[in-house]
Image (cartoon, rainbow, N blue to C red; front, side):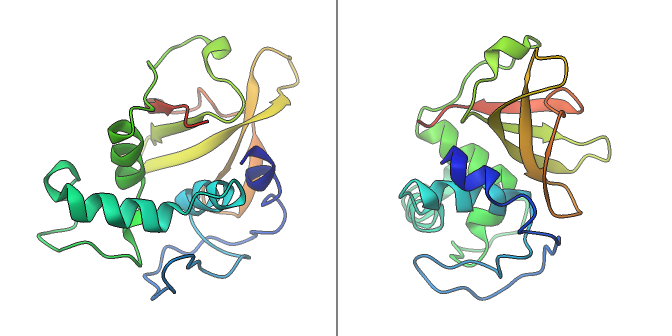
Length: 166
């Protein structure tokens, strides 16, 4: 999973949140574009887990547990797995949540971190196995608008979710 996340840096060079009709299962937007959640989804696929399918099935089974921010619509296999709040809900329902901490040591390679950006937008990324220049925390692989990057941003925004799936 971690190799799949890191490998996206320099390949996914754009950011496009547009709604796209996708194949199912295994659907994806073009590899050179996507959003923050696509980094996570693609990484999990490299580990053999199709979050598009898993989240779609989970929403069908437990619709009331998922956010209603997008209106009273039913499950949508084209977009549900691309929404940060749905990823957070799925990881929580799978009992993969960890405490939110201000200690860098608590964020380990392979962990998933979700933030609220200063603009109130939700964001998500993967903790890598690469250390920051100060060697005191791991870097994050994410796409915040200019393509997939690996950066020292674990504490750049308000952390609202911390998950360890593997």
